[in-house]
Image (cartoon, each protein chain N blue to C red):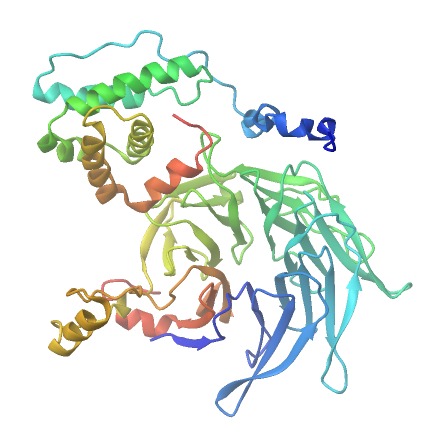
Amino acid sequence: MALNNSLLGWRRLVIDVYNDYNYYLDLAVPPGGPTTLVFFTNKPRKRNIEALKTVLRNAPISSRNQMVKDAALNVVMQVLLSMKSSQIEEAVNALDRDHLDILMKYIYRGFETPSEGSSGQLLAWHEKVHAVAGVGCIVRVLTDKKRV
Amino acid sequence: MPESLSFGIDPITAHAWNKDRTKLAISPNSPEVHIYHFQRGEWKLEEVLKEHDLKVTGIDWAPNTNRIVTCSADRNAYVWTQSEEKKWKPTLVLLRINRAATCVRWSPLENKFAVGSGARLISVCYFEKENDWWVSKHIKKPIRSTVTCLDWHPNDVLLAAGSTDFKVRVFSAYIKEIEERPVSTSWGSKMPLGLMMAEFSNSTNGAGGWVHSVNFSSSGDRIAWVGHDSSISVADASKGMAVSVIRTDFLPFLACLWVSENRLIAAGHGCCPMLFEVNETGKVHFAGKLDASLKKETSGVSAMKKFQSLDRQARTETNDTSLGTLHQNAITSVCLHTGNKANATKFSTAGVDGLLAIWDFNNLESAMRGLKFN
């Protein structure tokens, strides 16, 4: 063959392995994330907002364990998708800026793995969070090294 | 209405004023630097400085010694001096960097200048009389990524640098060959060259975005920076390096400038300069948009416009594609125009839309009711 395949070996290199994402993290990572995740099923109206606050407060941002993060994502999705459209605005107003940033991160992660009717509901959440927190919140989803 | 000057369609990557603000040096996103002169009521192109090979990334004009320093992506910097025939003559400065230079700043006494670069170091350059050339000294540790912005402390020794490793650092750029030992400041007392006096992370939990601009206040005690995570932060050395951050709702800022000891301007991708204030406890808060008065007032859509848009674009709504702000694209740099950092009355902004606007606080004060400028 005319092509020298040995010189193309670099094409099979996965550059992300060599990219040390933790290069810039100077803080020690707290051990684990939430180890027990409580599943909320039949929630009365007020507890929805409390549930949302709890999951956002305990969001495993610093954790490097992808399974912990995925489990947390599932819980947050459950909470977000089970809340009625009328409650969304009330819930968003009850959160502070940091939690809104974390919520927006989860909304975008939820968009990544759509399920039946989830995207529509998430869009409603997105609109309400954007109305309160502005574009800055979305920019922080994109720039924050700590993915949710 | 802020005064606005249009320099064509090319983005303005950097701009600098001379001492009496009659001349302006801009770089229109190319290897050239254009010098404009204000004569008989209009800005005329006086000279084009063509020495760099690649895009010019930074320009600074020393007001007292009347020298211009330009740095470029071609890893060089030139110091331009004006000869008797009023032509600008370049002198090459050997920065000894192997990556592009990103920003350049004259020190307050104009005896040296600092250049930030993608080579993860800062070159501090001074003129050596014996050999008649500019010598550079490097500040390397512990910078881990490209230096994006620089600013000097009023004492001519300390230098703040923001970088893409999400950190803002204050270094000592003391060159013993050309200056006396500096007196101690709130940042520290011992200041050998290259010593890092303070380091701030762009975000409290270790994340955050690139630092786009850093600025010392007029007293030198406070330092403000803006990051790509739409945040603006102020650190105060006189209060034990206390940092106050706000994560704003706006698009990220690209430039910031102190206009008094307690007020600063930030402008960037939102195309609108914003005013921020620091209160007595050191907390930053948003004080107002400086471009709010320019929303086009069209009281009802005229029939002519409606049919025109229907004819041309086949649509009945006539919302413009132009922004409600003066700048139609991101603002890349902010410079002091009149006054100083302790008390500025005018500042200039230049953007990707090729527009340079001069904002006057006196006019803005009357336009913004309810905000007191003291």
